[in-house]
Image (tube, rainbow, N blue to C red; front, side, top):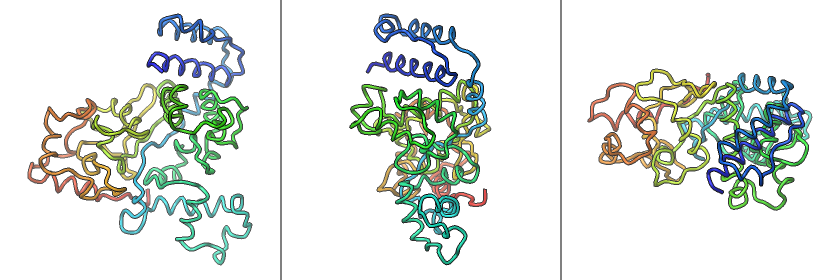
Amino acid sequence: MTDQEQALSFERRWIAAKAKIQGTSNTLPTQKHAMSQGLRDRITTLSASYNAHSNPGRLAELQQAFKEATFIYGTAGLKAVQYGGGGNPAVHVLSNWFYKVQSKRLLGKPDMAGNPRLQPTEPEKIKELTRKLNLYDPGPRIGEYIRRGHQMMDAYFGVGNELHTTRIPIIAEFVHYAMGYSPAFDANTSGQSMWEQTFPGESWGHWPNSLARYGRTPTQEISAIIRRAISEWGGTIVFEGKFVYGANIFDPRQQSRDTDLEAQELFQYFRKGGQTPRVPFGLGFVEFQWGGRPTVPTRAHFLSNWSFANQAVHSIDNQLGANDLGRLFQPGHGLRKIWDNFDDFPVPVPAGQRMAYIEELGRTVMDPHR
């Protein structure tokens, strides 16, 4: 799929999704007719067709839902569970929530919630949590999600767990239509299940099937839909950066996965000399967080967890040597252009103390009481 074909495919599904939300019966140009036009003309034709048949309907409700929503982006290595010496407080928050609120429905044990005698031990909790939710540990992001009622991308992807039941219904419905799923929308059915029903036998989230359909994986497409909506209608994306590997974002020689691709787009909106962790993103906002705290991002933050090292995070194995470190602070750093959007350090740091400062950033732990 070419870039133009990808853009047109996305635009067609975007416009059709808005129409379905409103219950309109707009007729879009056929793919054959649309492909005969230039990309700009094609998109204009699609938009005009939609506008000619649209009415306010539920679109205002959808837009308001996005304006009021906060989506958490970012991820973590598997050993994030052990960070801080006492385990990951975010995982304990999720574990407690799961057993107190969801155990009756998921585990079928009516007396478990609130009965200390029936509560599993902590290792049993983590094991059962992993089995029932099929969820890797996303570090501080999951803590923000649970404590503040934010939305998390995993809920819209759906990976065989129950998180899809926490989606905002009208946003989930819009994403359903924009992805081109064929079954009727059902808030109790995950995006993964809808994908499997729409495209039987095709793998979820990987090449080559989705490449021909979206030009990227389904998870990347869902993320793009939500980013587009927040940019056009408002809302907030919080990017939790503490456990993301910096090289995968900034070094063009490294493989970039979903979170890294998201960062590469969102980081375009930050500027060197910035005084705030929250920056405009179209009509919405992007906020950078570090261990659950709003933080002005700098190069030093990313360098404290630069390279993938057997699932370790913020260890000496994740960091660069002094020579490589010095090179990345120079104009000829060889990294992506977005690297130039960030100051070197939050405060002036003498050259001889740079390594120690970066190591200290890596040791900063999440405040479990936020």
